[in-house]
Length: 213
Ligand code: ITT
Image 1 (cartoon, rainbow, N blue to C red):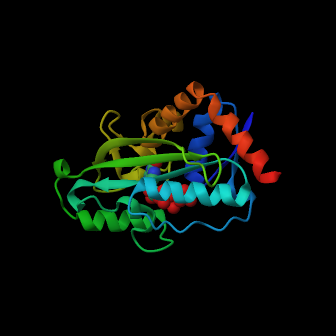
Image 2: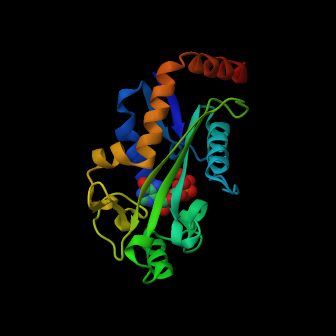
Image 3: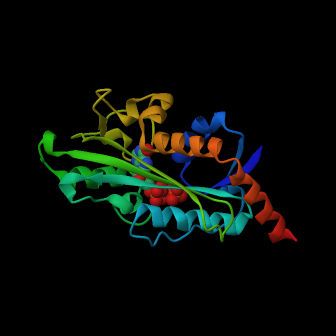
């Protein structure tokens, strides 16, 4: 069983990771178990921010770290909120405030022009100087509704219409969301990579032994 730290302070992500990672031999520990400071997300891309968060977590815990950087990309808003999704309505904004700003910014943009997708980039770093992290990414296409529906999930789920289901992401069971979503798809890729690359953990163990020697 390999121990990894999840480099996220987002409880919604943590719930989805835990549900999706049951089939792999990983003991997942949230970074809240350590008093690690939050990393500053200064990247302009999801992949840069995921690397920053994973490196910060592995530096503070000495464990391999898995980070998720994700967000909503809305066609009619030129790709906003993108990497700024968590702070769209300002630093520390609530999900509700972000959704309100999104609906206000879209105004009465007609339904067929409200296309959007969620993007998720996952980075698994074995140690802070790991030159070959595992990187997976996936997107989930949908439309932004005119008002929120559903109470499950987190973030923009209540306004993200999933065309194949005719429901918003906040109306889906967790298992269904994890099968379809950007995060679920990226995690499925990561699980496949880990199954194929047995040497990945051997190198992690060697690095850990070196850093404690
Ligand atoms: P960590 O950095 O601590 O992981 P965060 O919430 O700040 O948490 P991000 O910087 O990756 O994470 O921002 C992602 C934001 O994108 C998140 O706060 C939501 O607003 C939105 N988002 C990402 N995945 C989502 C999902 O599955 N459903 C709804 N909204 C999502």
